[in-house]
Length: 624
Image 1 (cartoon, rainbow, N blue to C red):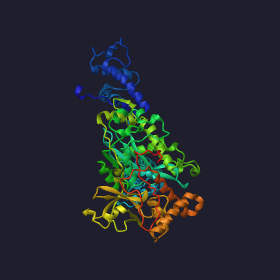
Image 2: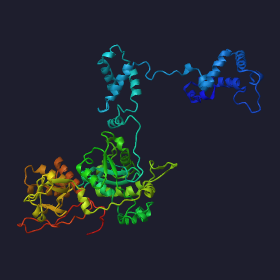
Image 3: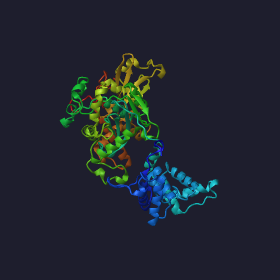
Image 4: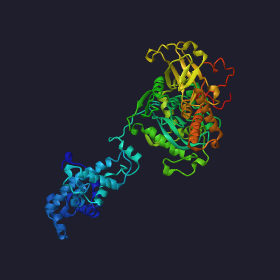
């Protein structure tokens, strides 16, 4: 056989044959090799061919006749042509050519089951993707119904119940057809082709953001134990968690605050070990400090400015506020395909890792499903929301950022895995550092916006009236924005209804405007408490609703004994959520009036307790 037509024989296929057939092939190989080369396999270097098989004295045909005579004399009836055929098969297919092909015959994939029945079974399994989980018995019944409704299946014999069960076990492998509904939908949503991932070679080049319930109970202010939402953002190139925020419910403002945290250094806090400081980490602190003074007392978490953020179609991430925040910071927002979690698999895996590496070690861990939940968790020791947020921040710096990540392996040395901080320090050499300093005005820009008129009585939002002396020149005036029909741009914080901000385009500044009836309530509260109070006083005046909201907070503060029943429990839950979101660090207001201007008939001025926005630059432990 010439070299051009030769190929490596598929020797590994011998494993497809029974053991006796494989042993027979090995036995024949020894005789064929002696015919070809004069020596059997395993012969020593000093061995010489037997005279009748010496290639130098006899032709190949003569050696084949000699081998046939030898085997026939030993009881193995074979002719010279049979030896020739085996020799040719061996030279073409290797050991597989010497094995008995009849012993390796494979049955069809589904035996003798008709192809129409197989197709009906596939259809029945596919129908379970969006339905509630059912048993195999239902799927077998559905197959029979499908066959009965098809004209081309009239002559098809329906297999026995046992055969249909065996057919189901073959077709349903990996589909979770009778298992978890959420897992079944996730499997169905996988793309048919190979998974792809956009390459990211620089910090911030590609980031992903998502929210998920955190499997931990927290103790809200009134004693109510509830789970919270975790919203996080991860950098693909370094796998760094640049920001993670816990809230009773995820709001659009939380997603915007996440952007601010990502581009702002994490300050060291009292009680944290000095080893968590950026100056003690692998990050090039001295070099970065010359570029960004904010890093002087920063913790070991890199500051990353996003270029592109991939998110899902949740209301939080496709809201006008979040999109406007991305545009404001020069970030490209890329929504993923609907019902395709694989488009942002990194953040999905990261959130799952937070549950595995952090949440299960926290008091009040509930497990991922109800069947994994312990008993009487509400009665045990639970962290408050601010305490859990502080623990999460410390864990991200102390554990996540220093833990070797399997997705950050060195291509030249696959056994070497980098930590997110190590990868960031490596990429910084080639990509550089871009600081983005933010001021108080910048945080106001990140808040949700609305457009309203400034009337003679001020601004009314959901039956709340906001007024201030500085609004005098703007009352009943056209804002100059023709697209908004002369309405004024107003930014508000859903977690603090005590004040709003009005953009004064004439003097290019923000005016802080307080709620007129703020003095009636000792503690600021958010939209959640206000809406709940409106439900309790249907058709009531603004003053009555304000009093009802204040009473709601007082009852919640007094404890469970203040009220009984589901309505009281719901009131305590609303108040607890409101108070939990009021724990953010205050941000310096833009230049504005610092006092509440009441009507001239009011002689007493109430002390204003602003709730404020998240300010990562402020020191939360500094006493004013």
